[in-house]
Length: 197
Image (cartoon, rainbow, N blue to C red; front, side, top):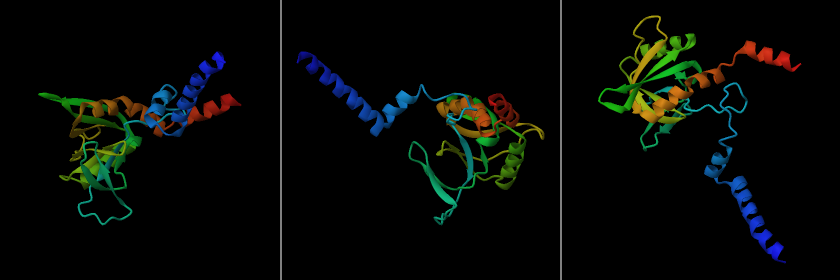
């Protein structure tokens, strides 16, 4: 009888933990599954983080299908055109540039691939002197005016965005992995396929 008494609380505790895990406590799930997630961008289980999108601003929203409101973590929001002008798919690397006198506010430099350079030139030409929106993981991060590269054949462009240090560092940390994930090496794919057979 005593053995059954001690086993019952233990079984209840295990049942409660299983219910929390499988029914909805998202924070608890994320904490437990954090070790399972992979950091390999070529894995099927890789989840891109700090994904970048650049959108044009809709000044007079008509609530059409091509418009959406994106919000920042601090409550600011803006209506943008859902068609991205630029994304992480063409972003090879990110450099963080701390602003002099205030290292918690950062500007960025993006290293672009070949297609990304063409997209950026179109973006900078089309929105010359006008703000566009930088979104990170679907949230509003900053407004900025896109600039042409300083040198004609440069892979790097500067974004004077003034974003927080945490977001800037996250973008720099995950840019290369996200680029590899969105642009898998096809030769490597076929080599892996041949090795399996």
